[in-house]
Length: 185
Image (cartoon, rainbow, N blue to C red):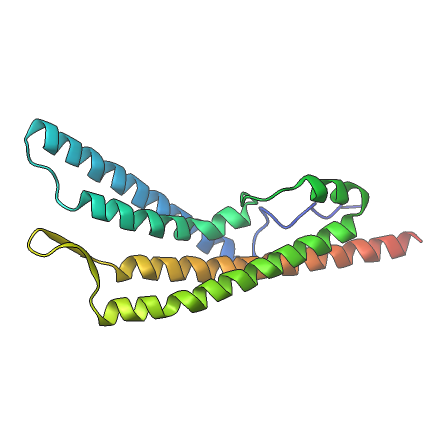
């Protein structure tokens, strides 16, 4: 008799969406590598040639926000989101159906929170594009803000969807456990 997994983490998501979360995570990692190269180039240029790379500070501060949101969904999918598991771990052992339902509730609330943040962040993107918002100083270095806001929205949308899919997987697991318990009775 096969046993269901203890939770929905690290399982493939429906429709292959785990591949999309992994791709967004990889994109975030590539951005980190790009920032490291940019920072090192700035250091070498600054110390070795007295010629710093302009805009490094602005690009780093913008990019960090985008990177966090790009990697959020895969972090959730792998079960690496920060949370306290002490109560849940005990429930998984002693009352697995309740544990599955509590995790579904947690994931449902997470989806709701991500949707609210997404809804609140959307006007910032459209406003940023319309006003041609930028960081930096004219004549020295400027970079548009909208790409980072778009990364945020993509990351928020994917994280909300991941929360929903994990909630569904948790509910299915809970239902499976109930049916197994009924079959044994």
